[in-house]
Image (spheres, rainbow, N blue to C red):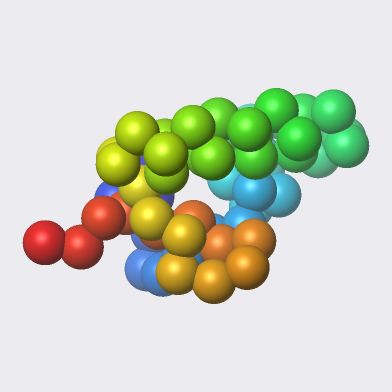
Length: 56
């Protein structure tokens, strides 16, 4: 998802793109997953609340 995006995405945008309802619970679950990807070095956080593919 992040690799195909034209720029950084917010958790709410990722939630919508994967076809989930944009409820608070779903957005928080996606945000948690994105944070885990960031900590594992598989994504980056270029700004507050934004997630993107690692460059390079």
